[in-house]
Length: 460
Image 1 (cartoon, rainbow, N blue to C red):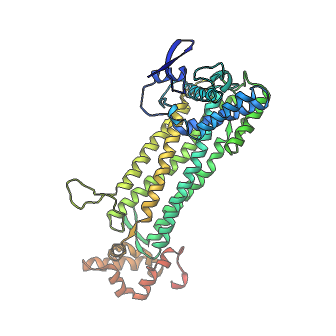
Image 2: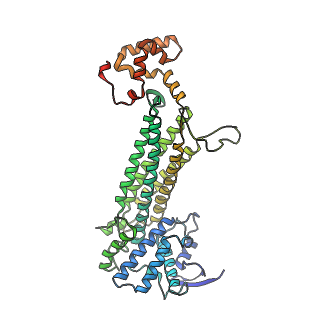
Image 3: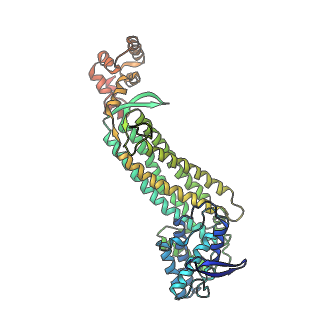
């Protein structure tokens, strides 16, 4: 491999000749060989959007030469489009509040801009990573802003995936509307309902997730770009501070706004905790939904799609592996929510030095949930109802007597139960038919009556 030599305040280092990164990135590669997990490319692309906005503001205000600025802007576009993805090799678990990420982006953009101006990589007299690409910026305002931009985009994608899941559940709600089954509380038989109504409960919970996820991007629209190191805007001209937000709004298409208190916005990352909590609410619903579907499959009320052999020793065994996968994703995301809260609590004074971990946890969780919601929606679309088993549970359950209380009263219901228990066996619904008549039993246990709120007094 051929190398070029770059220098910084700590000395010299060899950089692979073809690499677009520079000495700051090379040092970070050496310093943080920690997890083998790279920085999320969503963050990198959002950083490039921020850099482009800063560049365009500096060009318009005359702080940056137009020819040089246009090359920087074009290089930013290439990063945004993913053309240079392989040039961002840093580990996600790094110290420095995101400085290494910021410098990686600065160096790649600078060296690509140098190429566009017919120069050679590493000749920073043409375009400098700090003096030009990072002009009027700090890691402490560019990186938090980029994390918010990336998170908003991911939230929108997640909201769409949740909507698909909601749609799948609502289709099953309609498909199973006429299937009567036993409801259950505390893992015991309770009162009759319909399978469609049960799926409507799932759909309602997921619809709340969709709405909350869609709305919570508002919490992230306030950004601290222009605040530079600690939110005072030191080293940045006033006209630039006001213009750069407008530029970023145009580039991202997002309703971003400059924080009124840039110091507070730079020091605190609590909006991410709030958003993570909303995402975590969706996670809890996914785990609950998956757990219930597993039990319904166990009870043979539904049949899950067969997706793979379930055992290496038991022939013909099929397991609810998709639901198990969903629940494991949920456990991981719950842990990430805890990480985000801990990161927010452990910032110190004017910045949060652990923001790289927060950004990784936030984006990774949402990305996994997007994939998981799509997978689960497809799985639910293929669920089949086993109406014979649903009917069997209803017909054999003495708990259905509760549905008749408005018509026969509590005392008579007790007498009927005692009479049936003395018989010792048989189908409870047939027993009720013989005592109350088919018409009343069929009406009370009809899907319409079970899903209409309350009962009609005229039948008293």
